[in-house]
Image 1 (tube, rainbow, N blue to C red):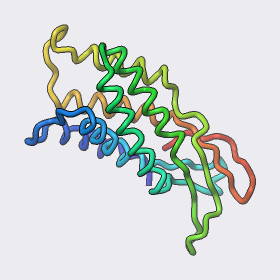
Image 2: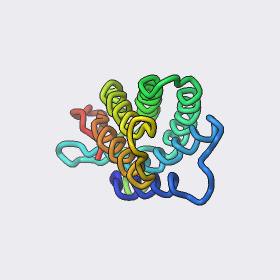
Image 3: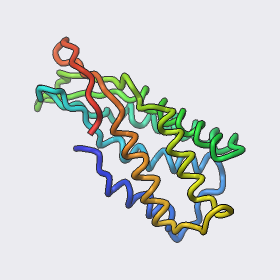
Image 4: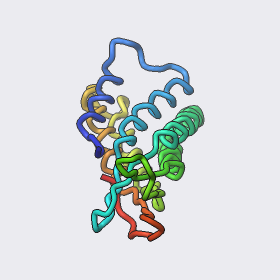
Length: 183
């Protein structure tokens, strides 16, 4: 497993160009964004430097983090009064997502021999700046409207780039390993 950028872009493309209308309620929009991101994030992996183990997010922690993310995004959408305000709320929500995700590696017999936690959930200010630029670039009042395909490509690339800055510290058989970025 690894982060699948193209699949993530396709998921956003389908979401933004689907025949079905986009969510109109903040809760539904937050849930949909959280589902898209959690589906992508579930494939993350944290390789230790010496290849002793590759940890992956646990399904239970991804589900919990996605549920919390959906609520936090709904709150951010509801409270947004500007692109910058929305970007700040979303950046906080996505950074918090990774703090709830637990990583593990198992033997072929299914025994856990390595665990991991995100110690640096990406830079919220970096994500906030990128989101502010994204929302400003696609403001139909300021610029010609962009296609949904272009918006999907841009937002998925933005999140993929940021997600790869999240660092995880793995513990293998009781030994703490150096932090590694997600892949």
